[in-house]
Each structure stands twice: as C-alpha cells, then as structure tokens.
Length: 301
Image 1 (cartoon, rainbow, N blue to C red):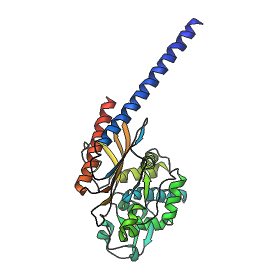
Image 2 (cartoon, rainbow, N blue to C red; image 1 turned 135 degrees about the vertical axis):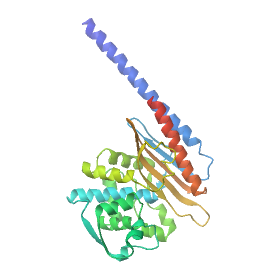
Image 3 (cartoon, rainbow, N blue to C red; image 1 turned 45 degrees about the vertical axis):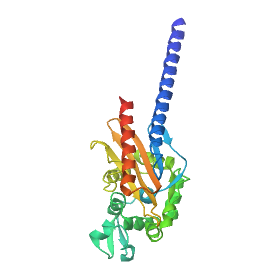
Image 4 (cartoon, rainbow, N blue to C red; image 1 turned 120 degrees about the vertical axis):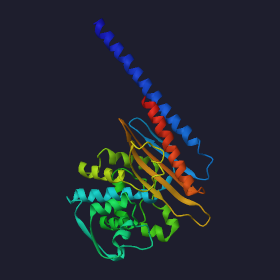
C-alpha cells in the first residue's frame, strides 16, 4: 500500500513540475512576443503581430486588419471545398470570358495568355491566384464559387465568424477605400493557417496541393521570408495595397506556416495605415519574422 502511495506521490510531483514548466514556457514566449511588438511602436503604422504554435496563441491587439491579397487564401479554401464536395478534379477546366480578363490590374495570367476567351484548369487558376497573386484569377474563382457572399459564408461555417469577405479584386482596384472591406482579426488568420496545415478542411490531397502552391509563392520574398535561412520551409500568402492621396498605405501583409526541423509555427504580420515606405514596411515584417524565428530556435534548444 505504501509503495502505491509513493508512486502516486511521485507521479503528482512530476505532473506539477510539467505544469509549472509549461506555464513558464508559455509565459516566456508571450513576453518575448510582446517585447518584439513594443520595439516597433515608433513607426507611423499600425503593426499587427499574430503567432501560434502547439502551445501558445498570441496577438498584440484585437483589431480587424485589411487583408488585401491575403484574402486569396480564403478564396482558395472555398474553391477547394467546392472541388471536394462536388468530387471534381483539380485538372477540371472552366471556360473564361475575355470580359473577365481585366487589363488595368496585376495579372501574370493576362501577360501569359492575353485578353481572350480561355479554358483553364482549376489547378492553374489556383496557382496563379495564390503563388502569383493574380487578381484576374482570383475574381474568376470567386465567380466560380458563387461570389464573395459564398466565400464569406464558407469562412464563417469553418469557424471564422469575424472574418469579412465583401469585395472582389476588381472592385478594390476601382475604389481604393474598398480595400478596407475584406478584413479579419489576427487570431482568425492564424486559425485558417492552422486548419490548412492540419488537414481540417477537405481531402488530404487537396491540402497538400494548397500547401505546395503556398510554398511556391513568388510575391513578398522580402517580407516574412526576407531574413530567414533558405532551409526554412515557408508556405505563405502576401498582400499589398494602394496608397491614398495623403501617402498612407492601407496595408502590407504576410501570413505564413513556418517549419524547420521538428518546430512549426504560424505567423501573420499585418502593417496597416502606414506612412512608411514600401521598403520600410517590408523591412518591418522581415525583421519581426527574423526575431521570432531566432527566439523560436532558442526556445527549442
């Protein structure tokens, strides 16, 4: 009987020690993130930092940030959900009218094919939308799933009720202030990244394909990836806005799934209402990412 009591006592002591270690580790991570956030308070911009790993979720404020092209990730999961539900294939093609190939917008797709009627696979459109941040591909896919209302409805259904998806790229391109309308709090952007990474939304095959496309992203190489070692795996989606007449930039964004060795974390950095230069905005994002990476590596050792 005494032996059993001794085992139970030792087990309780070990459990308590683990709880204390867990709390201290979480507190240290949150303190580090708060300290990093405070270093950037002097810039003429609102800087949102969201971080999550398997123990901690942190955001430095409750603000809803304009997503800009980060919202293409929300469109992508809605598209993949439709493919999954309707048992379609990524190689299925859709007809595209020349009227949907807008000329006065960012579009590597248009540069490749020109302005004409097209018949392209869903996979190619997803690649252009996410990896190349193509505005025409985005609006074509929004139309294919039933409009921004359908995208927002799906996003709410998967547990992100505060995220707002209201306007297309074409609308944002024609009226700068509408670029504020697609927006989300930091914790919901992190939650979406985590759902994508953990195969929570549709078939595993489709999750893998989306992650592969995110890893191929060519935009914003000077943002979250900027100062990270080349061996770090970054699957991300960037965003960048117009500047208003007073010089204010609505947003410079990056949202990423970051993996190195057995360490994995989710990071979103949203720079909004910035009077800093584009180069400074990108540098802010890159430096914050680098600092968080270094702290993460230190806590791993």
